[in-house]
Length: 409
Image 1 (tube, rainbow, N blue to C red):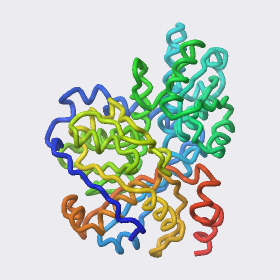
Image 2: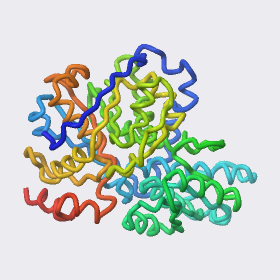
Image 3: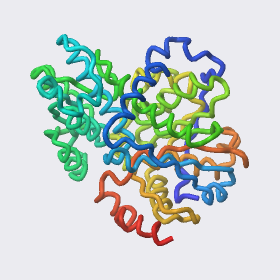
């Protein structure tokens, strides 16, 4: 199915499917009540549209399951990534709190986007460290709602991703070293200049609500997908990273469907496997090594503590894949290799789908995960070609050329 067989699977022995979601304080992190507020705000933003749910029927037939449902985030708000839902929503919440604390009452995202509060929002500068997509979302949110923005990137991030962030008006600063070095620099400069840090994970000394707001924003993608699926999928394969998206999916399904929820499988790069290591150890455990995976949006060494509190007892299994699997999966989608329409997907977008395809051809994994002929599997194509140069070097064509093949069909 893919050119790699480097699949590692760990079935979570601590999963408690019958445990009420509100037990252990998980609803204090994410809950459907808070999601309702996020949904009301985000769906009112300029340019909001429900993204496509693609049914890869021929690929599903080739893998011996009933359906593969691919939620395609390549057109989200023109940013090209699901991250638009999280970072930008957290920026909105920062600005709403800033205005409220100055005695001006509650304001909506529509009022902020209209520029009516620019005199107040322009006093705020938001910042974060990023490997690409989260920073782009924060920058877009700052431009949309009227704040200043400074984004920190580790030196390994491509120039294409830097340019994409700067295009939204953010000041971009390179940091020598790793993502963790960028996190520390962003925090130090924020403290020195009274900026607001908008991280997508909890860092040492972080008291911000932003990581919760980021994850709550992600929940809208899951909500849209469920409405589009019609019936509850039997399985969900979702990307790992620090765990924010996986936790958002896990919390949504746990609270809404309880023990009738889908089997949730978290997929990570083998070189950035902090969630699988945490599951094996029974406690948060960092990945080892330089995190040099092509799946840059998932190249994190430590799990978000908030996300882990949900995943520890909520995720059914953890899977790792190698870069070869991700590269071949990008090509498979671009080619429409099994007869489905071509799809443009970035390096991190394909992790969940690649994990599914590898599990389907691995007899033991297929049995452990109960992948059957009637299985309906939801995966998230979390980004389009957010780095054009990298995409073209892997696929051998530009996104427009790939889409031209789709139109010709």
